[in-house]
Image (cartoon, rainbow, N blue to C red; front, side, top):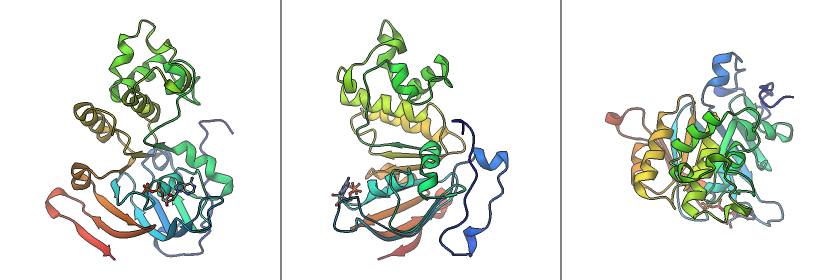
Length: 268
Ligand code: ADP
């Protein structure tokens, strides 16, 4: 299968036939839209761990939503992110992203349609262009790379004599942590994903630049945005706020317009 080829959806493995489990038509329009996400009774433990890190987690995110996942450190927020991104499979329950139910055979698909930006991303010894194009070097033009760099406020690259051909050294050691975060964001934005997840990914970036990046992300079309954050701005602007506590979704609020305020969907 070529990189750009969209794979076939898979059948619902959970056995639940209600609501969201209808067969989804696979038109071109569907494929370009932000992906809806469903967790159904998901429990997960990391390989080698003796206890579950997520306990029977269920929630739905609609296509194109702007979601904030919040909660104390160690509660499982990043773990949810890695599961959506297809890095791990849950031991129990089911996860759907777009047309695909997560299973061993389609984890690679999730890695393709989602972009996950953790607090610290792996940069490798190579040029700025190679680091941003990561995995797609032949599909991207220099113009695409510069556009992503500008969205991620990588102004410093403009100052390099060799521009995007500048070598950044092993693990981006020549860069500050804020510059590394910006490059990681540019990598995520260079091809608009169907799901974009940012895990406190601008915490080493000055507030003005972080706001610029945030606004650029909000202007993207056809993408489901998930921010793991404690920022009141993100929490107040999000259409859905999931609070995670000790591996469970302890509260969920949803609102569809600024004026309507939030609807509490559940509280523990
Ligand atoms: P948060 O993002 O809310 O800070 P995490 O999802 O990173 O929380 O972590 C949830 C729990 O999973 C914590 O107890 C953490 O120690 C554990 N954990 C995280 N990553 C791993 C891993 N790779 N292997 C084993 N346990 C992990």
